[in-house]
Length: 66
Image (cartoon, rainbow, N blue to C red; front, side, top):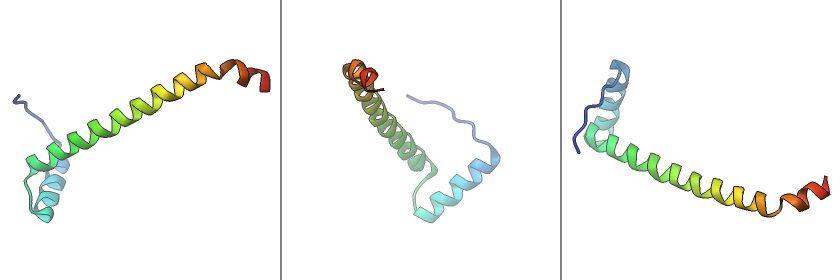
């Protein structure tokens, strides 16, 4: 899927500099950033779901211990 991404001038310059430093393209850096974001937020969702399940499971006990 093709899409347009509009960056601020400062973002473009910083991305260009980082790409040059790493010897890669701005495109490759952006793809990696998207992959990293998706992996991180997927893990956060798993942890959040497990926490909610455990909170529900132990809610009654935790209320009695207050």
